Length: 142
View 1 (spheres, rainbow, N blue to C red):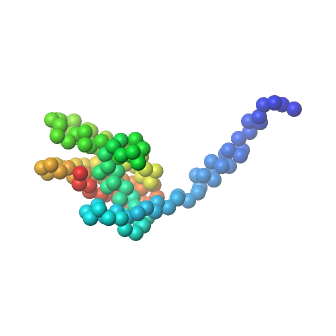
View 2 (cartoon, helix red, strand yellow):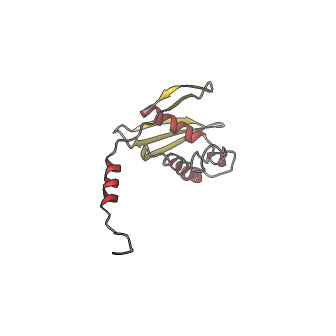
View 3 (cartoon, rainbow, N blue to C red):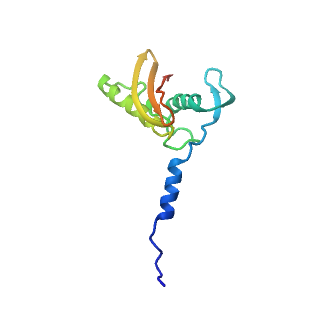
């Protein structure tokens, strides 16, 4: 009789295989009306993912205790700064990609573009959802 555990991993292998083949969990969340500041019914699927994209970009990272330090975007650091266009071209896509990659419903961030109009910054994000073949494009005003 040995005092060391048996190192066979068949149970672990079975659990990992089951986890990989399991269906994704629903992404049900409350529908947010950003213009009127109201919460509506629940949404799921692409609508919930689109709302996440908007919310993740608009939410300032590490500002609200309710969110972890992984949630949100750091774009406010660039507001009002005297930065070169080359720096903005590098940092804005990096910051937005970082904010969106946090969610496991997003497989890949394909393209981030932006345009400035006075005090406003408009961000276009194209993402590939983990479930589905349709690329989602969303414009966010910050």
